[in-house]
Image 1: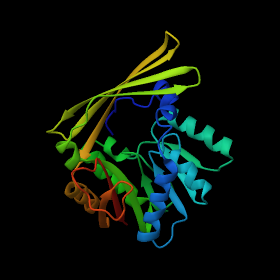
Image 2 (image 1 turned 90 degrees about the horizontal axis):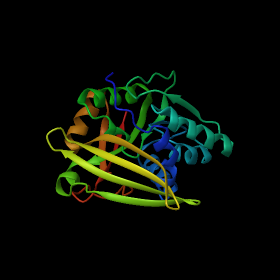
Image 3 (image 1 turned 180 degrees about the vertical axis):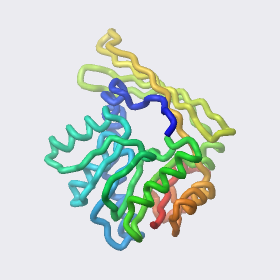
Length: 256
């Protein structure tokens, strides 16, 4: 396993939920359950790969599923554990990379949301991630994940973005500057986050997140190598729609 540039460290994790407070995890969990109902016989146990601060895991646990969460960031897991404890939910969280995953249990479904699989930027990492998912699924289990859609990235490349949110009496500013590598199908997403109170700069942190965009046929190939079948593609949150060059986020559904 290669050394990875540290991402989702303490300073960035501390503002993560504020930056994504408008993200509709309930709607996304509805979408996940819609996939379950249409493409799976029965789902009771879920493994959440790259669970982050628990956005999907907590909601699905509240809905009655037995959820296990995995993330390589200890800071993200600390936040997820705090939120689960506060909500009175029993969720097992494990600190590990997907490639090093080893849980003595097989699941009805595995999810990996919010472009977690796009962080698997090397071919060998993605193949191993798919194989690990296959190893941890029951026969007939379902693997659901989303990635950056190369069809859309190449047609409409990501641009600089400034985002501002409020945290009580403090303002959080995030500057995003993407640098695309068309040969390696990756984007270096450079984040600079400022926390400002009044006219005073309280903190400044920077992280670079290297993410990969994928094309449908290469994803299909990696999944087939890992032993998956019945591989389907759709736009994120649009199960019955055809994927197009306008859909930045691509959802993949594969059966074990």
